Image (cartoon, rainbow, N blue to C red; front, side, top):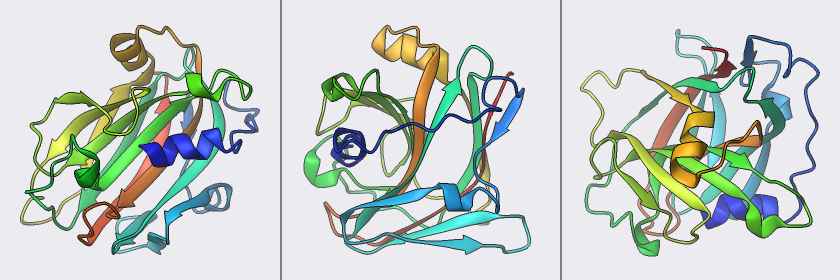
Length: 217
């Protein structure tokens, strides 16, 4: 999580609002045309992000090997119009012995961040929710990030993937989550990031992401 906050603290959060963000009832963020609008921010070398079109539509494959870099999209999302974030993800494997609540174990096969930055002049007030596919925490677990108190980790999936390694679909009310975890009733957020990372423990991991979007319901 220090990684994502590093993105905003370095002044990268110069938001370019989408004209459709306030009007659309569904706002897609990861289509083939939109992929160029995502940027990589490396922290330790590069997670390898590639297009993966294995017969089930456009998706991203993320491979790390003692590396960590995030793909982020700076975009203002109107949570009064589209508070629900939906996406699908899957993984190849986990490392069950990682101590995810400690810095040495802050590695995940798949994670998606939502970020609120109130002002570039007060970056220490940046808040983030990090939805993770946990290696070993139980589904529904919530804990502070190992590196900063400004981020909350939420385990939506946990443990090994199914034998078929099928896509799992998620849905979160981001506005409600910020109110629940930070007691902040936000009307907008400023960016979304995805990351598969394994720089702390050094174990390789692979994750896949697709259909990231915000909807009215």
